[in-house]
Image (cartoon, rainbow, N blue to C red; front, top):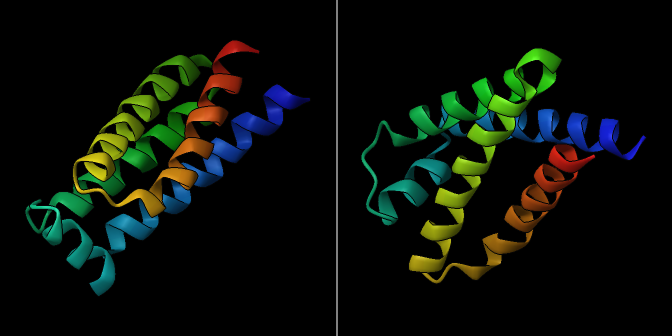
Amino acid sequence: MVHALSTWLLVAGFLGAGLFNAIGTSGTQSDFARRGYPRWWGILTGGLEIVSAILIALPVSRIVGLTLGAIIIAAAVLTVLRHRDFSHLAPLGGFVALIALAATL
C-alpha cells in the first residue's frame, strides 16, 4: 500500500511540477532567470518532469523514471542550496522521501 501510494504521489507531483514549469508563469520564469538559467530552462525542466512522471507510472520503466526524477530533484536541491533559497527545501525533501519509498518497497 505504501509503495503504491508513494508511486502515485510521485506521478502526480512530477506531472504537476512539470506542467507548472513548462507553462512558465511569469513568477516561474523570473525564478529561473534569478538563478541564472536561460529562458527555455523552465520548458526543459518541465518536459523532463513530465517524462519522469510517465516513466514512473509505467511499471516496466519505473526504475528509469525514478532515476530521472532523482537527478531532477538533486539538481533542484543543489540550485536551492547554492542560492540559499531554503524555503524550497521542504517540498524537495518530500520528493526525496517519496523516491526513496518508491524505490525500496
